[in-house]
Image (cartoon, rainbow, N blue to C red; front, side, top):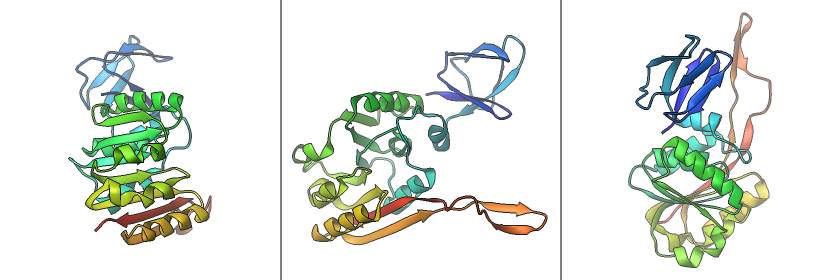
Length: 242
């Protein structure tokens, strides 16, 4: 698994054994580098080793588009209760941040990405996150694989694709009893289709949420939510198979 080398406001994500070259000098990351250890460049400049955490995946993964935000990932994990031993079917891999979080929680993930180049980047990101043994990145359109996947009994479906409603309609064929569907969608119209598909499929506890988060500003005059941006990301729909 990769580690972070941190110094003040600088952070570098590297594999153990890799070489870091900066204006502060050159150093080879020790193969046995441990969290909290201080390593130095040939110019005797110090960096602290930090173990990779979920938010670091979001910050440092190579990106092939806009990844799911940590606040949305938190809702997905909180509403589905995904944990070690669960099997997750994911679609719309993209950068792979959600898959990495799920894998680091101990779930086994099968994730579909239509773009072969994006999938290759996602695989490299899974290796960096140390979850390449738990996250299977496949190239293809999940809607074309539904018949083959039927009966595999996934505990959670996570979807971030424009045709998510098609997959939701087949959720009873894919989910274990008590399993959850979680869908991220950027538009209200798409969200409405997903809700309709979930209800038509007989899923229960169908719920849609808009995710908005605002930072707080604190100064000498007082405290209030920041006026810089609305903080909207998208809509999350959850449902469950009884």
